[in-house]
Image (cartoon, rainbow, N blue to C red; front, side, top):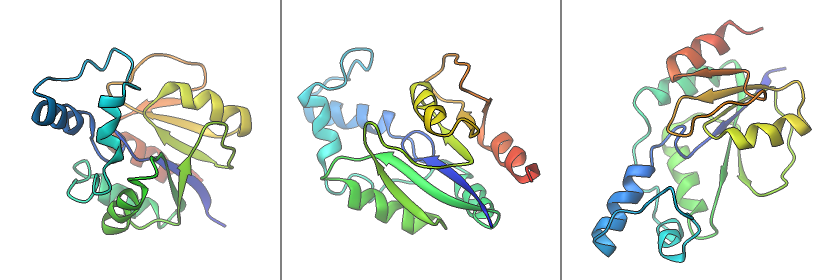
Length: 167
């Protein structure tokens, strides 16, 4: 039986931070300050677009990595979703990747996994509570920091090579 590989979507397989900033500039003529509260209703309007992912492209190389990994692992995407955009996110994934499942993440969610690829450290603590033996692979992104819950920090090539060597 294949082991389970959970893969985050935003900033892990598709870059949205710059798209979000560009959208804010076009609509409001200013760039958002992501260091402030990102729950500002104006900033959140971006995430409530039903076509949000329809014209986005995956990170370079990630389609081949995920599709090759799907031959060895059960690939399950997980991502925080607003009700308005989850169908667009699913279409994006179906258009680009071979995978076994898609979970709309929510606070307190519990799921089983053997491996997880994520860009945000705070989620690893939650994952390790439910899956103490899960291997957490942090994709090297703008969301850095340190945590005992991170097993490895990699770029996509390193993640791919590591997972292909695993038994």
